[in-house]
Image 1 (cartoon, rainbow, N blue to C red):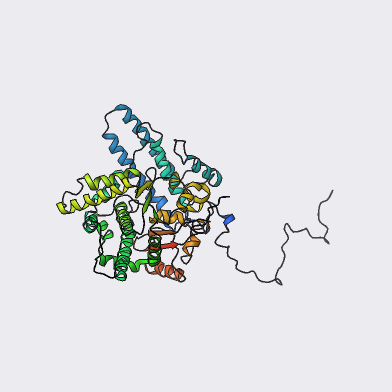
Image 2 (image 1 turned 120 degrees about the vertical axis):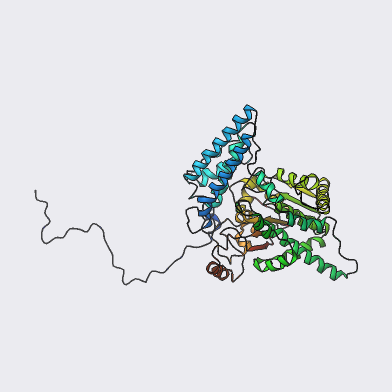
Length: 502
């Protein structure tokens, strides 16, 4: 039987193509950013996430180069410790931890898929594995959002030791953190010689003059606290001692010169907020800490001033439960700093007057702890992969606790990244929009972020912020990771409202 098509018939086309020349032209429709709250989740931030495969971003440099370098130095530290051991059980146990570090290096370098965290008894295991199961199945180090992948690496590093018998609390970065303080002698004594004794404003001044003197001191010490964040071990791996000293300069002239580098500047609003607290008989101020060593020391100088001036009557410091992002503060770092100041012999070239100033400062701070004026805390949520947009839902007890604070000061780059979901929001995005529920949820406390800019996300630069960022992109490539610029941003929150959970 013939299957040829008769000449009068044509074969039907394999696909139909319509000519749409008479219809309206297509318009250039951009994706709606930010995402609506119901579409936001850890793998889909409000604005596009930074991911390791984005070669234009600092995320790529971190995942490809910085993290393997940091892990390599951690392995070297553990091997040095291993070589100092004599007891067989401890040697074998640490050797197994080092083998696990090697496996982590293989996974990191080979861009392996993110596996669940081993149950090592930590309070954050369920949070980690829930987040991985819900949002990151099949994701690897390079295509998961950079913030989560980087945090995951440090959680895996902790796991290398937490499942051991003798080395559960071992800190591979401890020597480095101690070194940053010992190498900071000039800046350390610059502050201790000024604040060893409780400060006093001259009695000969009028009430207005005293308030102005106090305001100026507040602004300078806020800057000391801000720029102390320049010393971040995860970024300054190969920095010389002279370069560190330049970053840590705390002289008044230096601070006046650097204020122009605060691109988003709510310093005066922050003073007004603190002054308002005192008018209400003082209040509670919380610090969500960043780096140990010199930065923690600057935070404590600032906190001391807040107490002495009556701007606060209690300071709560929030640190990490275990070593995190190289230099973040742990309880061990906190205790080491206070005891080194009072009893240590870390500065052999210092004069007796300098050493005595440090001892007096440390003794006063230890007394604050005994009296409950300073309180150190370490909630498990701070060491999870969640951003602070999820603090309200994933750690309601912590959100409720913070809601009772009169001001929560988040220190440093990592905390800022977690506040803002570490995504590509425009630089003009208002801070209270960028931090989502930490500003908009009922009962959200006043939140301040003191951050030297060391990564891609930049918000809160005002109405002309996009133009400012574009100009810096053109004139100073790398400005977002140099530590030269900073932001001091404040959200008024919704304090006093009843906290509600779904």
